[in-house]
Amino acid sequence: MNEDLTIGRLAKEAGVNVETIRYYQRRGLLKEPAKPMGGHRRYSFAEARRVRFIKRAQQLGFTLDEVTTLLALDDGRSCRETRSLAEQKLAVIEKRIEDLSRMRGLLEALVVRCGAGTSQRACPIITTLMADS
Image 1 (cartoon, rainbow, N blue to C red):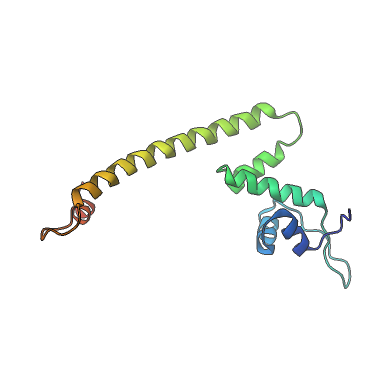
Image 2 (tube, rainbow, N blue to C red; image 1 turned 90 degrees about the vertical axis):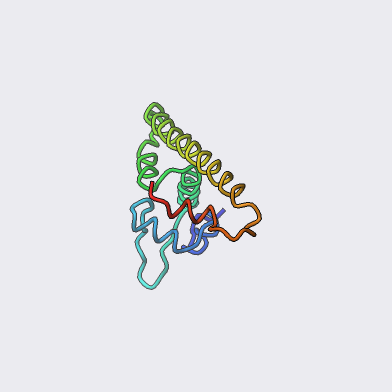
């Protein structure tokens, strides 16, 4: 298989768009290869794997700054640090789930109070949102 990808082909192989590749380059997550005189920059399939890694990490909730740290830990000897980052991210996600569950409960209660919305009085949802805490 040819390891000589244009930026468009790299984007396609990685499942992103070209602007994502350029953004990752500006952020320092992906190196920008030299442009040969009169030619196009060329990328390898290893760079496509790197982009897929970045996207998967983002899907798990890691920020690009955290992804930069994860990429720096890819030396085969940093499992403890990587695990620690993952545990921290898990704690953030669990807190977010708690917050979302609380918000869900509050909204469910407001929707029930609102009923069909046919009464002449003020909407309980609007009233609650406008109330001073």
